[in-house]
Image 1 (cartoon, helix red, strand yellow):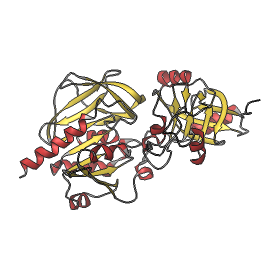
Image 2 (tube, one colour; image 1 turned 90 degrees about the horizontal axis):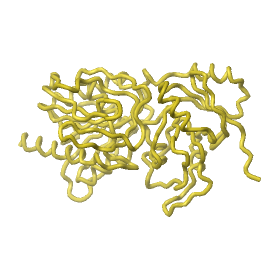
Image 3 (cartoon, helix red, strand yellow; image 1 turned 60 degrees about the horizontal axis):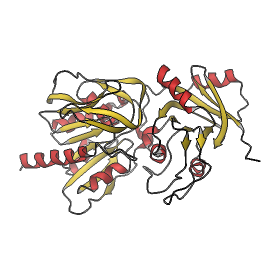
Image 4 (cartoon, one colour; image 1 turned 180 degrees about the vertical axis):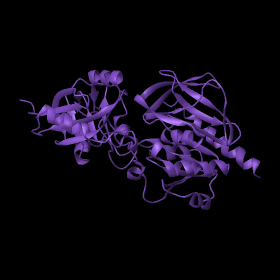
Length: 377
């Protein structure tokens, strides 16, 4: 006889209900329903602060077969509001595994559901768009009551979440080998792999809280500033947008990714908008419009920048252009200024758990700081 699992329900705010089995922790949880198409990298997804307040549906049917380990964690906890899988692996088989996936979900208090058709859920979200969702196990509520409860929860549009995920105190990731530059990384939900990627290139990274002031940044005498990924609606980041404008005016080399890219876009005067179902996973094709090269990239974002693709644009910091474009839907994936040392992309160049087509962007940031140092010498 196998383990007897209690019923659980995944309830979308359009009234659609998927019935499955309780998994990890029992109870209720709510968030934005999003899907990730990666067949691997579930540990990096779970520990990525950008997934705060989101219920993640794993499209791939088998999840958990390689277990969990400390090395691959992107932060010190699991951030997802809920986790949805079809068939959690009953066996963990990997020489690097230290714990099971379910054990980590339980220790982090994550409510999950298993035994649902995650590909059907993914198709539903792809066709109708990301929406609010709840997972219910042993709730005793009727179907109508569950739907009403989901519809009363906050939407992601208008959500300010940076304070929830940012570091409380500055910490330093030292350069490996000879120190070449100092970078201040504004933490709006940074992944651990990002400062590691910079440290491997001889950059000393000072990871600072998202509410750090311009004066505090300048006091660290940085060669560059990095804008991290993170959760929430970029339109709510008024103080960060004003801070980025000061950095751009000071001509300090600037590199932003994901949420940081969206904030840079708004600092340049562009609007951001909610994508129908976002880009998530590790297999998104992006075209570099300067080189014509196609990069397979890792994404996790639900908003995008509305910038003109066909022509260069003008800003108060000089001319700029759209540098990268998503081939799936034409969404702007990169911005670059021609007269100020700043660029951004809406995907993950550190790309844990892969692919690594975009890792050259860290080298580009390095070159930007080299050029600025020469110009200011």
